[in-house]
Image (tube, rainbow, N blue to C red; front, side, top):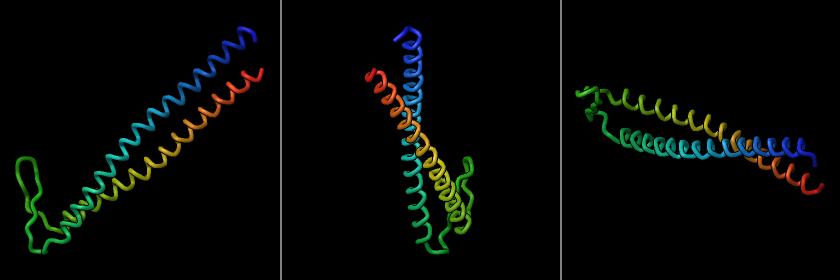
Length: 122
């Protein structure tokens, strides 16, 4: 092979490796974020089930700076349900991004293997 082809091949492999490595790092970070969201979702679900098991006459207090304000049970339940919906929406969006990153990593690895296979055949 000529020096020009070797340089182009090296540049192509470096680009593919950079893409695969970058996507793998993003995927690892995304998996950590998904695990964090999963823990948050479980905590909200547990809180919601505990609140729903309380009698309606139970006083609830929410923090407001250095004070506490009495809040109706329905209001607290609604707030926690909204948080649960937000976490579920985030998990769906992150799941889509995870799928994209997994495909990107796999495609970059396959392309690298293909290029190396062609070079070895020559």
